[in-house]
Image (tube, rainbow, N blue to C red; front, side):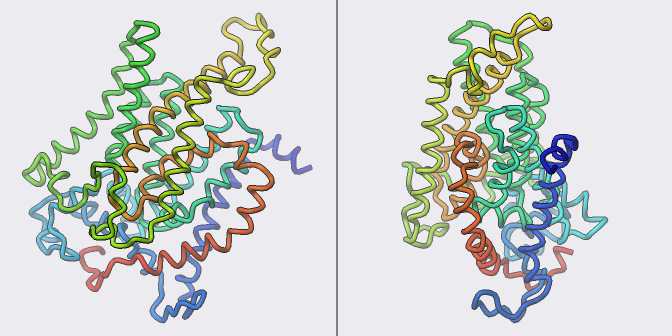
Length: 420
């Protein structure tokens, strides 16, 4: 009966995803809303919802949302949290724009978490939609649910003020439009990604590598691909805007100790550095393994597609031709999936090279844009019975990790006036 209802109601999965996203977020907020005195043995006498709002770096995005990066604004002149005005150039304007848009309804502080929640809903719904187009698994809702809960770090950043869900959403939608050869929309969405977080420029570099490889095979150049230049153009537009607001075209690079790309790679293993500060870093090795395996597996999917094409459908299906004018649906699907694997390979390659060069303790957050691609790459494993059972058993641990992290990673805001 449920299966029949599922088929007759195409929006049922999206309703389920929205419910799970909102419910799991409220569940994480619940101890803060109820102002409990103790959580898992941690004393929390002054706990309230402000603790959620004060989570780094959410409040920092309020400042550019309120000031428009105007160096002469009184708020920036007061150096909130002891941070000079140019420091906020490191916080790209995409996410602050949504905070400013929502602030008339809920105020600036709550707009940070509301924006994140809305972006998370769209991100998970689009991930499910993308899976329906790729047709690589029959367990799309399970895989989307895995993305909801697999990494505690994503659980945290989608429940506090954070640009990451929006960033991931724009990356996924840009890749989807690229795979569909809708380069104008891919460029627009990639541009939105890069004005949300600068690492999205790697998406443009991946597109370039894709076309270079294709040009070597076909010796053809399609003029409509030029729309992808909207991605670097968007970044350039932000720098021009910064030049006007800060009087410094390179304000992003001169914003302070915010650039963490260090060569040679693996420089994160240095406890003396300010953004590392510990030798307890073994889980980072497992993240490198995790995404390194994704990279190798994507390469294998490119050079050795499964029988019947990338979808794994029976090869005999390709014989069903002539029913309608145009290309066989299976052939079209194979091309769609193979283009996805290929552009994903280039993107993961570049992003992987960047995260192994990041000298910052929070590699788990920096690497989050790779997570949806990894789940798609290993869809069979992440939707298997054994994995789902283990994930369910570990859900309490993931929840407690998230609570523990949110109690720890708090901005020391004593004066709320610049943020209201």
